[in-house]
Length: 205
Image (cartoon, rainbow, N blue to C red; front, top):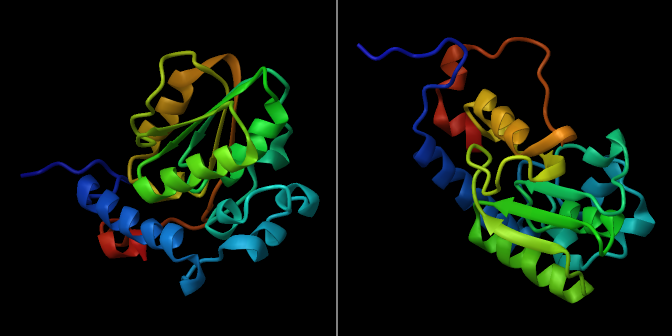
């Protein structure tokens, strides 16, 4: 008999990652298709990003933006800080972070989808930003050492991870003492039934 932790989704993590990667590959490669979630410039306005800052970013980074919140509403970043962006996508939040921390700071951008990482890398190059490093990785296994970051940001990623406690533990691990976690994500106000948590197709839409 397999024991399932109460509240934890009984889904195959690798299969789920594959389904999510396929969905966000489409967002990266064909953002004009339209999806069941908001994307691009209209989404940035919905989430309260300053238009003047958005307009300074390469269109490729903006058109594939698919966040669910705005981590910068919790406060701006400081010059010289090291930031880890968990689930960076096309680099939208990473590039805004890079501007805020300046040349003396650093942004480590982590994503599992190759096409998103390629967009983030090319957008940073187009902006002439040299303090962004894009790495392959997962929220549950952040590719950074202990005490590596002053701030961890994330946008619309934690909700896609079945083991949220592991994700938060990883964020805590990579933070320096006194560091900050600034997450924009989805919150529910009523418990999600276990059978819904265990339905893998409901995770990736």
